[in-house]
Length: 293
Image 1: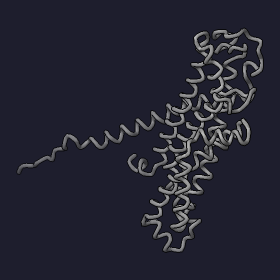
Image 2 (image 1 turned 30 degrees about the horizontal axis):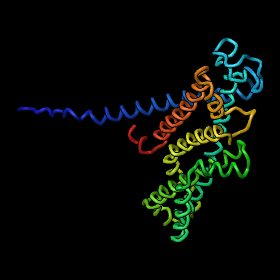
Image 3 (image 1 turned 90 degrees about the vertical axis):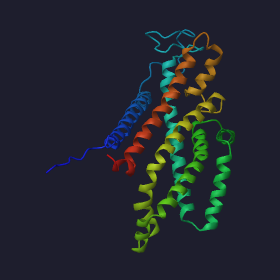
């Protein structure tokens, strides 16, 4: 009697390998993003209690290169650049998180209302969202800052309102898809009210989709605040801003390049770190990605 041993196709191990590769990529994204953003966050927290010099301290020589006393050198007025970078990190995180919080509250609320409302109300909200999305973010921010005055609070409000429309549209689309699922129909049949339905079924399935947009909103908020400060419409002195540091350093960039290079590097590192961190967290929180682990 001949026993035939079945052979395993050469590509049978491909799915396992393809699973390992995304898992490794997710781990790298989460680790790199956590390190980059974590360093910026630690610097911002330390600036609450300590900086090497005061922001208005002009005891150093003008345009000094990095040294043991002034780790990043000094600016054109003799102020310590490292102290300004630390406070700028704190300002960037405050504006980023504050504007994302405003965008999340307004955007998610409007998106949920549009998804469960009647047809005419849904159409009205969607039309308003289209207009808000088409309006330039920086222009809206400049109008609000001109109305309320240049301050950190004005920048947070302006950037948050500008980002709420994008979050609202995405929330509406995602919520509509979730409400069309069979388990939602079954829950409704069993007598579950709409508010409870949103709390126990809709939001847990919607928020993983919103993590990356929130990260993009955070990065956009940091860039928008730097742009406003560069134009003189951001947080006024003595608060330090990376955007204002770039504006002040442009006339002396050939003499003291660190004054322009370091704020730019921190801006890029903050945005990349937040995006990678959110991408990794999204993959961890996504039920579809958990199911293949």
